[in-house]
Image (cartoon, helix red, strand yellow):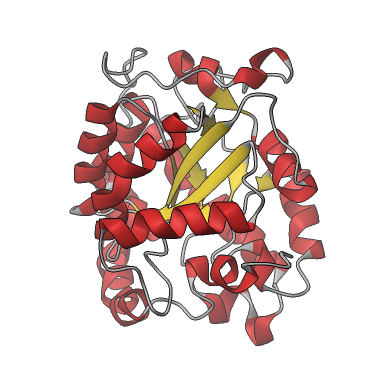
Length: 303
């Protein structure tokens, strides 16, 4: 827990679910339920070559750590040079350590969405960096093509539960291990159907963040048994706070201040969103990338 800036970081994925999610989840889930598994498009083998303009810098830790396995992974093989195993990123976050040369991990939660996600993919491609997308299962059922595109363009895919339902996953603010692990399994099965049977995912993000809840030891153990590491964050755009950032300048300022509150770590894991409130993160992306580049950061994805 941070001594400085903890409140800002804790609110990054909203202790209470964003109203747009709570209000729309019922109708979205109903639509997803009407879509049988036969309606999901068959997984197409993704291109093994990301777009020419989208090459992320290889993290300097490549010789220090084992790279993420690209054979059965959450990214295509050509993303392996800039993919860092989730277990390594988890350790950096929990021990407040990092690689010798700074590496930034841009992460986007709560998608895929039909509006923000394609614009974000376009922007990432134009700027020339890659990101990690933590997907909600029922939204993946609704927007499978967006996840297929993200994977094919060299981004990494993480799991963010199936429902993103705080009251179901954390009754009384205490983690329910069976429900959390069950939603990981359910979403992984959807990923395999949409993205390919050899898709595997070792990167998991708790809705609201691990830092926000009690009694997660059993859930952590269940995930560990599956070879999965949970990933929080140490900086953010503030696009889903109770008082969210309103424009690109505020988004950049929030990243700068939360990064400083954490001690300007060499492993910067940025929380942002590609659903609903994600317009601020989309608008601030060029300035955020410029900020990290000016400080000597390369860019990686979480494998």
